Amino acid sequence: MENERGFPTMIIPRGTEITVNDQGQLSIRTPGNLVIQNPGVYSVIECGSGSVRIDPTIKVEAVSIHAADTCLIAGTLTAWRVKAKRIILEKGAQAFIMLRESETLELDRAARLVGNFASEDELYLMMGRFRRQFRELPGGAEKPGPATDELPTGREGPLLGASSEAQLPPDESDAADEASVVEAVFASLTEEQTAPEISPVAPPPEAETQALVQLILERERRRLDLLGQPHDALDRLLELVRNRDNDRLAASFRVLFRQMAPITEDLEQARRMLERQFPLP
Image 1 (cartoon, rainbow, N blue to C red):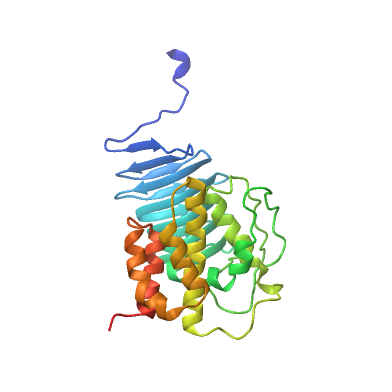
Image 2: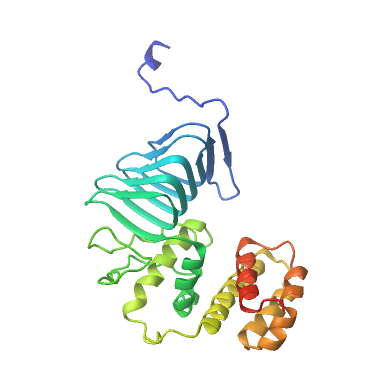
């Protein structure tokens, strides 16, 4: 025991929940503050009434981070969604965040923030505009290397960088993993400057909506294929969307969604978009 006195002590506060999902990702839900001093891949990090801090030089990947007060990043964070009252990036920090929900955002001049979409609608809109590049992303056979193109500059948009550097980190996780999807989407968005098929003229709202719906349905179909689950109703809906058969689509999409119940959040998003396009009389 005498030799162990110099070792750090780990205290797990009462009410803390620590679990591991099927992919080996940790989920930590704690009622107070959380300081991460060890790199890792997480599913959910949640501070019910406190703040979360990622220490310098520490690299963290997470599907979701939720802090009641502050998410303070001094190291490197790659996350699908971050929700906090304040998000602070200290000097030298790097954050790759797809969906950010915060009242305030503070960045040191030497910090970098990539992603920064304000909502899922904004994300689907950007993915819809680059749907061809997104479909051409590797499906796991090959891992993409570091991106060298610079992000678009000189105009406002949902994709922001806090420094002039735009090199993205290599994808080091499985393509089916949420963190892989995050970095893959970042890589696809950097192709904006060279993609020849992107027209400078924005498509009409109806066509753009159906393009986004098609993207969501195609991703859901691939997911069900991987899980070996049936998707007959999804196939019929996808065919109507692809063929732009608006009369039959308006008459039957609600019935087809009911046949798919229960539906995922992505499919719920697609249903809401179609309901806005084809409201009930």
